[in-house]
Each structure stands twice: as C-alpha cells, then as structure tokens.
Amino acid sequence: MTGKLVKLGILMALAIGCGRSDADREAFERAMREGAEETRAAVEAAAARTPEPPAAIALADVMVADMGVALKIPEGARTLQASAASTTYSLPLGGLHEINVQVMGFSEDTLDGAQRSATMLGGTVAEANEREGAFEIVLAPRGVLQTVHTFAAGKSVKCTGPRERLELLREICGSLRPSA
Image 1 (cartoon, rainbow, N blue to C red):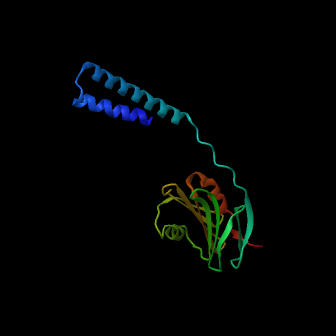
Image 2: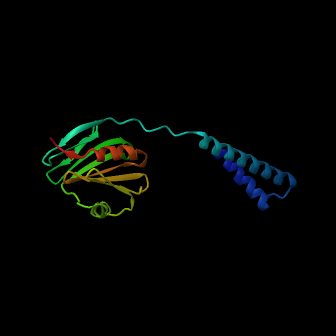
Image 3: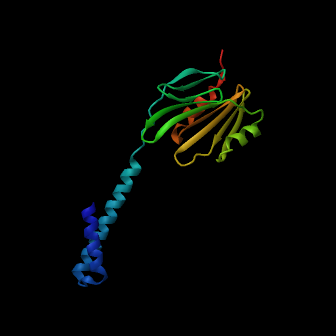
C-alpha cells in the first residue's frame, strides 16, 4: 500500500505541472481510480468483520475486611489496597484495560445524594435507579471507560472497566450486601 501511495504522489505531481501530456493525466486518473477502489474494498471488509464478544469473566464472593460487607469480584483480581475506609481490587484485562472495584466506607440515604457522590469527581449520570434499598448510578462512558456506582448496606462500591463490560460492572456493583 505504501508503494502505491508513493506512486500516487508522483502521479499527482505530474498532473499539477511536472508532466502535461495526455499519457501523464491518464496515468494519474487510473491511479486515482485504483486507489479509490482499494479504499472502498478496505472499508467494506472492515465493516463486514464482527467484533468478537469479550471473554467471560467468572466472579467469586469475597468478604471485605473491616467493612462488614461482601460482594462478588472477578476471579483472579488482586487486592491493591485494603483498609476500613476503602478496599480496591483489580483484574488486568491486557493492554491498559482492567476491571477495577473500589469498596468505600460511606453510603448515601437518597438517590439524589447518590448521584451527587457518583459525580463528585466529574462525569454525567446516564442512569439512576433505586432497587431494594440500593441506589445504582451508571455514569455516561468516558472514552473507553464505563463506571457504575452502587450505594447499599451502609457502604458504596465503584466499578470501572471497558464500556463493553457494562453488564458485568452492574453485576459486580449490584452484589454489594452486608456480610453474614
């Protein structure tokens, strides 16, 4: 493809004054048609490919030390930090992507308060729901990242990961409950 671009550049130069013969112009027009056809074929091939669905991620129950809650996190996730105020788990997905789960030692009593807390550091609320005494806040995606917050059991959890993993993030955050 690079060779064709060089050839195209040379032919363009010929067309704008370096060669004014009919043969030069015909060669330029032929190269432009060929380039347009290659581009169209590449675009059609790319559109025809269907992206593979992300690999399934199994979840495991964990009790969050010093917080009195439990939830499901991705199997194989590492504990990055643990304290009575905040515990963070991370599962690398390859490249720069990860599933990040942060359990925090505070909650909100109202849906409005949950929305304010979820957007305290920026972001826009895409969905806000109240279910069985829990508040779920889904923020609008930011680039490739999706964030879900759940406020329940006197604590909160923030789940962040690739936007195509929204349902998994909802499942993880929605599993926050008091530990037995």
